[in-house]
Amino acid sequence: MCRNEKKLIVVGFGDSITEAITQMPDASKRWLNVLENKLNTEYPSWEFEVHNSGFGGHSDREKMQYFDSHVLKHQPDLLFLEFGGNNGKFLNPERYVSPEQTYEYLEQIREEIGRKTRIAIITLPRIIEKHHAAYISEKSGKSIEDYFEHYKEYGGSNALIEKYREKCRDFAENYDLPLIDFSEIMSQDQCPERFTLDDGVHLTEDGNELLAELAFGVVKNEMLSCAQ
Image 1 (cartoon, rainbow, N blue to C red):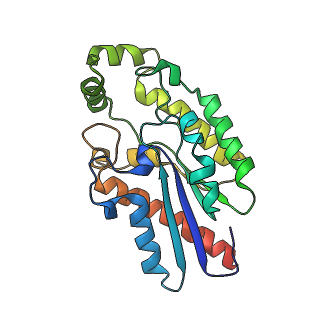
Image 2 (cartoon, helix red, strand yellow):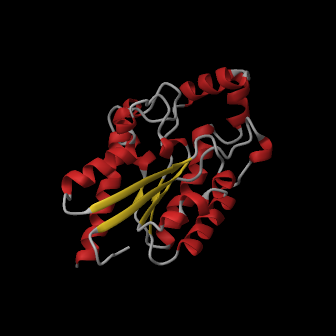
C-alpha cells in the first residue's frame, strides 16, 4: 500500500456496520468519518481519501455486485472488509450465503484488488440476541418465539454469526492480514452493551468511536511499515 507521495486512499466495504447510518444521523459520528478526522488531525501533512462503501441489509453475495463500482474504482491503498452479515435464512431464505461462500468472496476480492491494496479484516460485532429478536420481530411481523426457534439449531443467532467470524479470522491468518476482531474486543469490555444499539446489532456512538480507534491503529501501523 506504499505510495511515493503522502497520500492514502482508504475504503470500507461491508454492510450496515460499515455504512453506520442506523440511529446515527450525525455523519461525523460514523466510524469511517471519525477515522478520517483522526488521520487528518494526526498527520496534517498527508492527504487522505476515506470512502464508505457500506450497503446496509445486503448479503455478502449482494454486496459483491458493488465491488467494481464502489471499491475497485477508488484504487484503495487500504481496504477494510466487514463481511458475514445478512446471510441467514430467517427472513430471506433465497438470499442465504454459507460461511464457506463468504470465504470464497474474500478470496475473490483479494485476487481482484491487486498487490497495491492492503486488506484489513473486521469481524462482525457481538449480537445481543434478546434485543435483536425484538427488533427483527417488529420489523418482519414474525414472532420472537419464531426467531429463537429458528436459531435454536445453531445455538443462537450470535453462534451462527460466529461461523462467519471464524472464516474471516481464518482468511486474515492465512494471508497475514491485519485483523480487527471486533466482537472479541467488545466482549472483553466490562459493559459491552454500551457499544450496541437497542436493536442488538448496530453500533452506538461509543461503538463507532471504538471501531474508528481500532481502524486508526491499523492505518498507523501500515503507514509506519511503509516508512521503514
